[in-house]
Image (cartoon, rainbow, N blue to C red):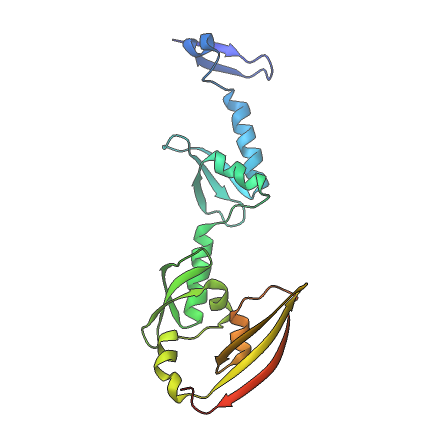
Length: 205
């Protein structure tokens, strides 16, 4: 049921099912299609390899690290539309595990959102969800241990005045390390922070 055809537009020669030619659908120039897939992959940091055994998926590898990726071309195009390079999940996993180990943690798995992961404290064994950014900066504490010892640790009540662009607000809280707590807020860049009031307590009861 196949015949040998030449595409008038590009000049490439290909065997095509006669029934598809008669229906005028169900075929494309494989050479041109492959060139197109290579070009769009290159734009987001990938190298196109070829077909995958699962229909609709293609094989790629990352230009930067060489790790492989199995993905739908439609998802590659979504990255192009959003001007985003494809992220290597294998590299991300290696980096997160390295950062966790350096911070005295063990990475267990995903958290409640993309920005969080679940970690186990090596020192005490407690499990907690923490943002990956805070783990990288080592700006966190075990909430379970903190709750258990909060009543006999020194602490400060504070009142902050925060301003970002035209928005101004107040934040009341308490902590044994105000600067560390401010970092935990993850405030937008160029936010001005004024500590209006602090009151020190020897015991945080």
